[in-house]
Amino acid sequence: MDVDYLRAALRDGAELARRPEPDLYDRVLARRRRSVRRRRAALAAGLSTLLVGIAIPVGLTTLVGGGESRPDGVASPPAIPYADIYGVPARGSLAGDAAFVEAIRRLPWTDQATQPGTLPGESSLPDAPLETRSVVFAGDVTGGRWALVVGQNTAQPTGPAADPDLTDLGSLSDIALAWFVGPPGASPDQMALVTVPHGIPADQPTSLYDQFSGALVVVAAPGDRIEISPRPEVEADATVNRTYADTNSTDGTAVLAVDPNPYSAGGLPAVKYRITREGIPVAQQNPDSYGGANPEPPPAIALDYLRPPNYLLPDHLGGNQEQQLAEQIVTLYGLPADQISFQVHYVGPLPGPTAARVQLAVVTAVLPSGAVFTDAFWLQETLLSDGTPTGANGASCAEELAPAGLPPAQRIIAMRCEVATGNQTGPAPESTLVVIAPEGAPDRSLMVEADGGRTTILTGAAGGVSLTPFPEGAEVVTVETGDGTVIEEVPIIGP
Image (tube, rainbow, N blue to C red):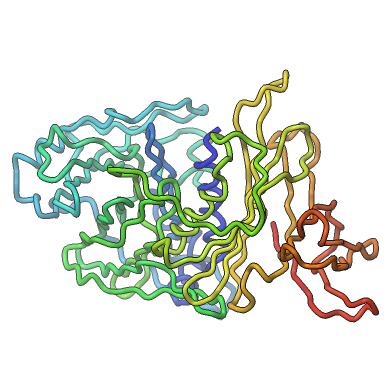
């Protein structure tokens, strides 16, 4: 199993839930998500696309529209004015080169795209007939030459698979798109397909971001306002905000160079864009991204190990688990690695429901404001019936952004880690209370209030790490003096 992809997918979902941005756009977009489905038949949500060796996770998209049923006295947001983004003439610095544009239009859509197995009622990937294709964007960008082509969506599902409440809405649209990328000054025959062709509604924007060069192209409707936010801004009190800057686009395209991130393969980039049409929010999302040409692997991120790691899994499965967590934190916040201080609190065994080995990694990151992000992830080897390891699966234990205060090395971390087999017919998940105290601290009795009473934990043993069955109902770990006086309460974080 591709552990990097699994981890990225899990983190993508957590990103949306953990860090809502406190502005009008989020509130309006969240209210109007479902109304889009009723306003127009051709609608789309994010589509995660993969090519061989290239991960292209589409940004978490919130779409909006009008006509939502509301209680009496509650006004509905205004409907978004319709705009045909993909039916206008080609845009970009090479749009005037008729020979180049025509050659791009003729490029095949199946160079690298696979034809995965389909469910009943579904068809293969879109391969727009040549006569339906048009070039939407063609231009030079930082480090290369890009082009966007649209055409008839030949892979619209039928039957039950076409239910808009059950199916990826982008697949229902009449048009599909494909991005082509080449080196600087590339001729058409040097342009390669870098996204899996997929459906897109005619009035919703698209984008592409190269993490290694920092090139970013956003395609919207002429007259749309396109704004860019390079990264989230984290305050010392752990509040997260974003600042957006207008790109001053007039033709509905923005061609930019934002900060590159050599560590961001397989995860959502920190950059976001938002689109406004006639003053009404259309979308606010991460750009779609792909792994462009990286001349050499990025340097390892400096980590401060607070206790020696105890690796259970081989290197190709999890030997650098903590390094990958650090890379994803760099990606999440869009900061240079040397601006974040990383501490590794634990790499070692975690109880699981089967005989398969489980390895847990717990990492904290001190951001420039002093706020502390805690990330914990477990990996469990997958075994054949004869016990032969074949790979690994995993999931997040806990993610928390906490205010500045004590250095992480002096903090007690408490979390709930639930290890599941991923098999519905397998044993029940194993739930563990993980408590990590500063290494070298004397034995301290920590008390856990649970439904069935109180549990005592000694943190001095095992280098300050305690792994015990999770007491159901527990929410905090308390540090008490000998006479029972509570001197600290540590919330238990986790799923």
